[in-house]
Structures are given as structure tokens and as C-alpha cells.
Length: 122
Image 1 (spheres, rainbow, N blue to C red):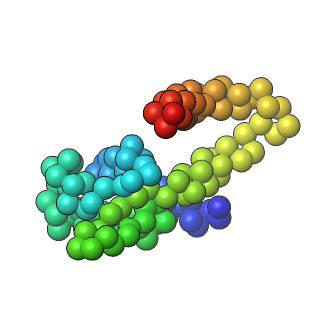
Image 2: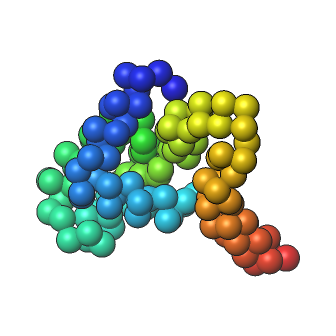
């Protein structure tokens, strides 16, 4: 990820409603949520929500897909990965123990979610 793209992403997330939208969409991966449902859950007027969704889309943090008359928004997990990678790219400088606490902090949420999903699929 280039610095300019990272700055655009961070600027988009530097507003409380957009941060809430992004986190809500992360929670609802991989199915996403319709725009109206996002607005309802966050108690934001639809026209205001449209503006926030547009900013997040331009920053590459979310994507939209039309399904009939509904637009479904989803978090762009590749962008999440790129932002995280951008932030910690040079964190350890050859000393992995420096970044280990960060990796450990992220691993449990993903491991539990993945294990629960696998159990549900069985």
C-alpha cells in the first residue's frame, strides 16, 4: 500500500460515523448489509449515510453490489489487510519477538471465528 492510499483510508476512518459503519460492515462479512440497514442500525439519516458510504467507497475500504433494488455494502478485507500491513511493515526489523504481541492480539479473534464457522459447517 502506498502512503497516499493509506492517508486516504485513515482520513475516511477519522470520523466517528464512518468508523462505526466500517466496523459494522466488518462484523457482517462476508454477507454485508444493505445501505438502509446500515443507516437504521446506526440511527443515521439515509442521505447522510449515503455520503459516509461514498467516502468509504472512494477510500477503497468498502464495496457495493446491487442485488435487485438493494445495494449491499461489504468491507474490503484486502484493504484491511493492506492497512494493517502498512502500519506494521517495518515493526520488527528482523526481530519477530517485537511484533509477536500484535500478532497474538489479532490471532485469537480470527481463530475463534474460523473455528466457530467450521463447527457450524459440519
